[in-house]
Length: 120
Length: 113
Image (tube, rainbow over all chains, first blue to last red; front, top):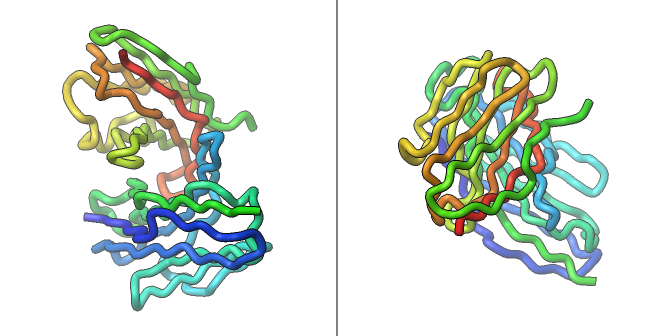
């Protein structure tokens, strides 16, 4: 069974602060994918990143960066110099890959989400 | 690319009525997923199809829920009869080969009164 835990229910920061959203996952699959999605107040789910379990390189995209550590089963997301527009619910998610072949294949399991509020 | 298209955006219905939610996946995507989002349970997978065939429906809450995918460009999620506890946002998502990036529709906000 797959499980994604986002221990931080809500985070509140002031604009320009850096903020890290934690994500810890559990899976029996040997290969898998990890995702982050953003859900702004308008309600849609916006894809941010997908990571293959074989690729532990950290990734940076503008003010966003992701730290994948297989040893601790974590895939944390950092926003540098946060802005009010970053206010949203952020979801971490996990899916088994084509090599897994098990019941988790293709099933995207979400964490409970972290509500991020960035104050001006 | 029009993205994943869901209809209606909002649906208000009375308890006991049949509700049908619709989804058009992105052209070329061969997997389609129905998710439900509630405050209590978060985002949960109801069912997913691969090449129009249901692969896993273990998340469908009960027999009142049914889903079909008659062709590669259309899927429906039906609730009959609807109950107030079915009130939620229902998302449809599609991707290629199940582990490509998942693209979500805008969701259908269902309210059963």
